[in-house]
Length: 313
Image (cartoon, rainbow, N blue to C red; front, side, top):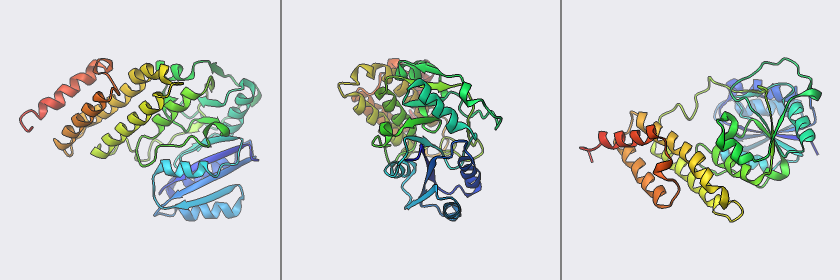
C-alpha cells in the first residue's frame, strides 16, 4: 500500500503538466502513487502522461472521454490504493516537502484531514524541518471554516485526507464549482482537522479560470445544483443541526458569487438576469436560503438587476 495517492485530473494542460508531475515525483516522501486521469485532452497532455508512466511506475494513467473535473476525480478515487489522498490540479505544483509535512502533522495530531492555511501563496522551495512544524487542531471543523474568513475552506486541493474518509465520498459530476459542496459536506462528517501555516501549494494564477470566463445560464444552474445537493445532505438527521449555519454562511456565499457574477456580466442580458430570478425563486421556495441572510450589497444588486430589466420584462 502506498502512503499517499495523488489524484491529478488532466485536461489540456500540456503547458504546465511537466512542472506538476516533476513536483510530485521529487517529494521527500517517495512512497506515493500518482493517479492521472486524462479527461479527453485534445492537446499533448496524454503523450506527456504516457512518457512519465514509462519512466516511473508510480505514475498511473487512466483515460476517459471528456466528462469534467468531478468525473475525473471520481474515477481516480475508485483506483486509489493509498492510505491517504491528496488532490492536485494539473496546472499547479507542490513544494518538495508538502506530503511529508502534511503526513507528519496527520500522525502527530491524529486528524483525518490536514490543510494548508495559505492558498494561492507559495513560500518557495526552501527546506523545512518537518519534524518540528507548527500546526493547529480545530475541534469544530465545519463551524471553523464557515465562521472564519478562511480562503482555503472551499477548495479540495490544499488538503491531505485519510483515504477511508473520501474514497466513497464522490463529487457532484457535470457541474462547475464542484469543490465547495464537497468540502462543506465532508467537514460536517469529521470531528476535528489540523492546519499548518505554510504555503506548500503552488497555485497557477496565469491559467484561464472558470471564474474569469463569461458567466452563463449553465453556471447559474451549476451553483443551484450545488446548493440543492448541500441542502439534501444536511437534511439528514445527523447533520440537520448544522444546516442553519451552512445556509447563512456557505449558501449565502455561493448566492453572493452567483448574483455578483450575473450583475457584472455583459453578455446575454436580459435572458441571464431573468434566469437568475427564476432560480432564486425556486431556491427560496425550497427554503434553500433566506433573503435576510444575504449581505445588503447583494440585495441592492438584486434590485438593480431587476431595475435594469424593468421595461424589457
